[in-house]
Length: 76
Image (cartoon, rainbow, N blue to C red; front, side, top):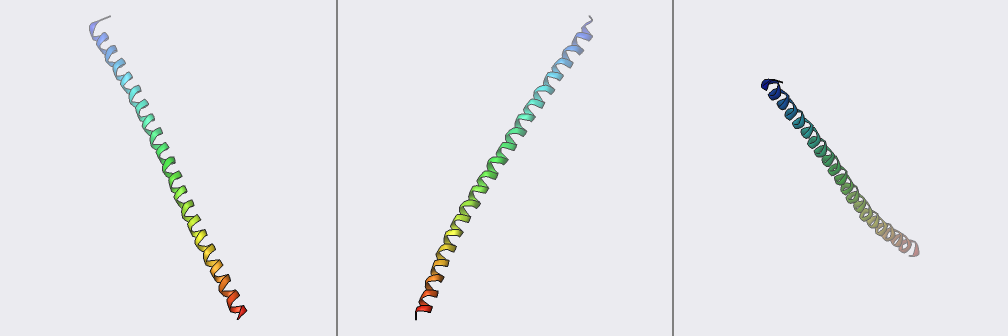
């Protein structure tokens, strides 16, 4: 085998190996990015759930206050 063919073979192997590593790295980054999206979505859902619980508690208090006022008005 000539020196030129050895150099070309070595260079093509090196480039192929680099491409494989690059694709693997890109896949790992995409996977991590998607996972971060899931974590962010879960945090948003938890925040909305907590806000809904607070609103429900406020509405429960207001409902009780209105019932108490209604009882006072009917009692007088």
